[in-house]
Image (tube, rainbow, N blue to C red; front, top):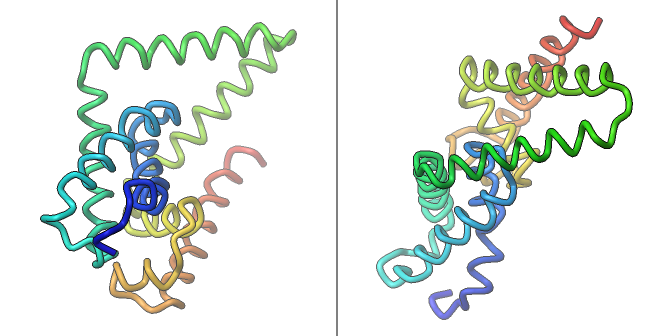
Length: 176
């Protein structure tokens, strides 16, 4: 696999890098265009110094590098300005497409509530959050996640079940 082309390497690890960058930035464009491409290019350029055959190590390395790069992206004042402007433009366009102001307000409130619940879940149960995101969102196999966390497949599935149940209960408290 040391003769792997950049395209093969990129396609293999793009989803992981992009997913973790999005978790920090909440912006698919920035996560994909600015963060994941930079991270993957840097990893590919130093691939001779890495054991790219060790997928577990590469996964962890790309995860950490993507999160750090995304945090650096937020710290840059120019990207901060762009990020805020994109949200303002999106909010303005959303309001223009909807005639009912109450509907716009309710959608915005529901979105903010969902982010709040996810942040609370991440704070209270960080391992279950990571496992849920990796398996259900990033579509990483249960076996790979189980190996990374030192769990059995049923242990991973049990944590996913508990995470879903916790989220359902939190949403149910408000919407029932």
